Length: 406
Ligand code: GLU
Image (tube, rainbow, N blue to C red; front, side, top):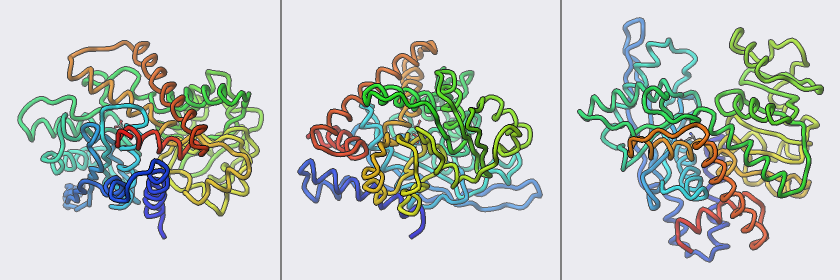
């Protein structure tokens, strides 16, 4: 089974399992599993050499019981129909677990954006936005950045969307640059949220863990690293898709990010040992932070994991069958739908600000983010005790309770 199907299987099995714990009828569970609709679109792009290349894109609208569909758009060569369905399912649960009045959606284009020029990337973003325009809107479905997409891409997409519908509608896309209606604090929000969850979870567990290995140095991994470093954690390993670097005496993330910006590779950083992404996961650290892609911790490497705490910053980094192995080893994991919820929480704040024509200060945004995540974490910890389940299942139960009003 390929990776994407594995993630869909994980999400669906967890809904089945936790739905049964909530005594939901099988019909209710089936309703929660099935996406409302999956849109498949053709994305034609004029390449720099004049040839028109056709890409395939998707938008999965999983569930809107609690509010408009909400979720990112990723540009990646491994995007598939199953992957966007799985990710949109996680968005439904993420928004619910964080008490947002939003549902779950996710989109993607099958493309390696690193092979595109800047102009081709803009034309691709615009073509995608034009193709999904009839299906989105500020009260219908609100996209945002995800893997390999950012504020600039949201700005292009919003511009194209507004041209297509013939009116302004800034709340239809979140994660925009601040000058174009974005919220202060949104860029850092997913990483910041992860550090907030980690700090509060350590407090609740009464643990004083210090050393961290982070897989992935995109938006999520880099802000997680910077903010955790500022808070006094010791970052001993960092990686990008090409490999990583390990230094048991600690790394300054800003310096590593600078090298990555200069040469394109984290592993060009000279003060440390070059490691692979697989090796990074098995390092002797207190805390492991998968912040790249799904299905990286599986039954094949679970027995080699030495960290005591895993913070799931990627969506779906651990496969379902792996949780019992980790539990047996006493490893606790903070579930993705909580740990990486900071991004969509501040997206919600951005959506509110756009609709009310307000501008919140960064301090206000960060404070509200912290309150929201602390409440969600507390609810999940309480459920975990009440139902005697791990935090992943507790997060799913917390979300399903809110969606089904049980
Ligand atoms: N792509 C992010 C996620 O997976 C953010 C989604 C959003 O802000 O809507 O949570």
